[in-house]
Length: 107
Image: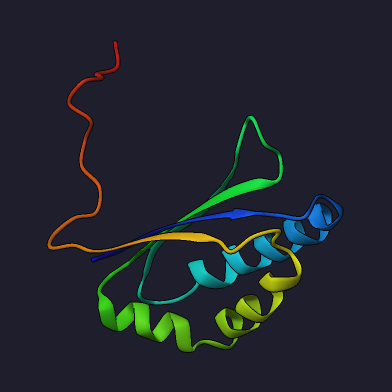
C-alpha cells in the first residue's frame, strides 16, 4: 500500500482557482481503480496551506496514477498555484495504511 501526504502553500491570489482545481483532481483521483482514498484539508491557521492524503493499493497503482492525464495536468497546474515547493511524505507500506487509534474510544 502506498501512503502519500503532500503539503502545499498556495498563493493567496490563486486561492479560488486552486480550490476549483483540487476539487476536480480529487474526483478524478478517486475514480482510479487503484486508489483507496484521496482527501485534501485546509490548514485551520493558514488558509493558504493545504494537505493532501492519498492512499493507493500498491506501487503499480501509484505508477498508474502518475501516468494519468489528470495527474499530468494537475502537476502542470500546480507551479502557478504554489508559493513554494510542496513537501511530500511517501510511504510504501506492507499491509494496511490505516489502523485504529488506541488512545481514543467513542463513549
